[in-house]
Structure formats: structure tokens, C-alpha cells
Image 1 (cartoon, rainbow, N blue to C red):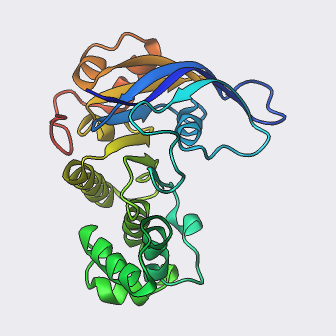
Image 2: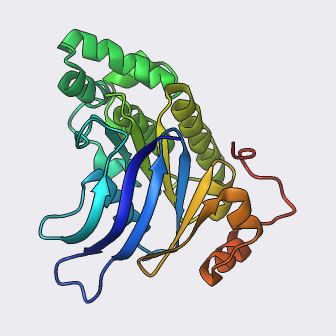
Length: 260
């Protein structure tokens, strides 16, 4: 497969932090795959995701190499990479309508005029299975449920038709049934559009049902990487074994279905 992004010996240290958030992380992300980045809080998984997306804070020290052989040049923020944050309440603007926010990416990156962007926003809201997308487009974030806001955030993230979609702990604040629906939606979208998905989560059971490969983070380091069935079925790292023991009942079928 084609490598979309190649990461070599990546280290990240936040300003005034006593130790690096990432240390010597190396991995390739293949075009069209679903890669789950797994780890407990503080493991460095979200830092890795934000480093890939170019969303690290200013004055952060970064060493190593991050290359994009699958693109013609450096990725364009918002165009080649779509990012869905954990809390859509903080990533959505409370004073703008849903339609304005979802259509912004299409206007900025695809060159659509205002009317065309409004129509595209309604189409995207329908794609993420929101009921009455025309009505939702006129609504404001506070008028929607948490699950609906997360679907809006996903619609906004794919508005510019990115090559890579990063979903950073997008299910952690949702109940179990809504979690399953959001994960199924992500898989549906990336498979239909040929996108690559990086799914960041602490929940190995949830990720194991959709991921082609799993990358396990601990203490800012990549401790295990491989096909999902191998990592879950025969973990080599102690940190992976602990995650499996905590989150996966091997006698129970995966939530979403087998990874392709």
C-alpha cells in the first residue's frame, strides 16, 4: 500500500514540561487504512495525533521527521487533514449556525460560493445521518445533543474532502450506544471516500472492532504496533497486555465487527 505519512524518531516536549510528551516515535500510516492509536491518559496518543495534524501549541519543541510521501507536498491545514476533537462543544462556535460552520471548509478550501456552501452543508449533515438536515443547518450548537454535535463536528471535518481524518477521543463523553453509532459512522465515511482514519482512544475494545492496525502508546513511547488481531490476541508489550485485560473480553465478538 502507499504510505500517506511517515513518522521517524518523533519527539515532542511542551514548554516548561519536565519530560517529553513523545520520545522517539516511528511509524508509517498507509493510505486507506484505519489505524487505532491506543493508550491510557498521559500516554502521548493525543500529542501524536496533534503533531501529525500540525496542531501542537506554539513554543513546543519538536524533533524528528514527519513526511508525507502520499501527498504532493506538505499537507494543507483543514484541506488534507480533517480533525475531530473530543469535545464538540468546545470546537463548535456557539454564535454561528451549524450550516455556517459545516460549510466553512467547503468555502475556504473548495472555492464554493455562499449558496453552494450552504447546500453542501445540508448534504454533509445528511451524510452523517442527522435528521432533517435543513433544520439542523439553521440550528445552533446548544440546541443539539452531544451525539448530534459530534456528528456535526465530523461533517465539518470532512467538508474539504481530506485524505486523512483524525478522530481524537471522539466517543469518550458519549454513552455506549451513541459511541457505537459514531464509530460505525466514521468507518462508513472513510470507506466510502477512501480516506485514511486515525482513531485515537483509550478503549481497546472499541477500536479493535474497526482498526486494521493498532499502535499502543505508553509513557510517550510507541510500545507495540501491528495488525489488530495479532496485537489483541498475542500482545508482546506488558502495557498492551494490561489494556487487553482491562478492556477486552476475548469470548465476546467485537462491537462493530471484524477489522478488514
